[in-house]
Length: 191
Ligand code: S3P
Image (cartoon, rainbow, N blue to C red; front, side, top):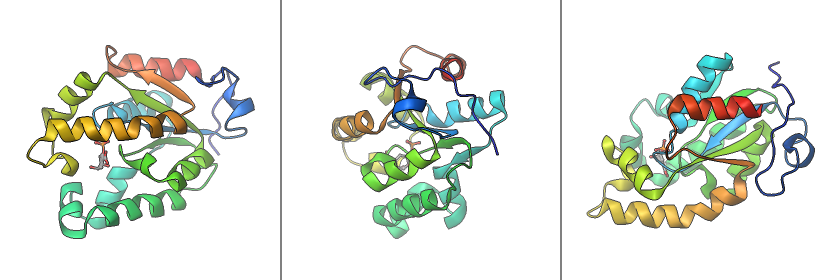
């Protein structure tokens, strides 16, 4: 079984060692954050650098349905996608180890956050709103932004979700002015 070295990862809220306060005994990492935070890219780089397995919920759900995420939303509805997220998290065994990369809406269900906690420490990749928007809108096929005013919808979703990320996370990283390699370095330095 993969074991993360138990070093000095600290909770950004209480500054205690995470292994003591939040997720005692876990051995994995879950990346959460809004669209454009860089979760997928950092997850891939982290996996490459550490050799840990990567479990990307969006990728796995796409594979299950055999169609793209916009098509899942269009044909089956958002609820089916959200249910698939929860069902998938339930199939990930606690102690599986590695890196769980999540979609931006994973924090919408408290149950998902509880399931992620079983997998390990939850790291929130965050960035300034304008930077998130620039990244997310670059090649956006994101179904939630297929609206007449995607920028306004983006801001609204971000406002709704910030407290959820805040509550869910063990450690927050601002990626606004960092490269993928730098964010990965920061995570590795915490392990
Ligand atoms: C979603 C974000 C997407 C994907 C789906 C829903 C969201 O993932 O899971 O389109 O609700 O914010 P990214 O965060 O990788 O864009």
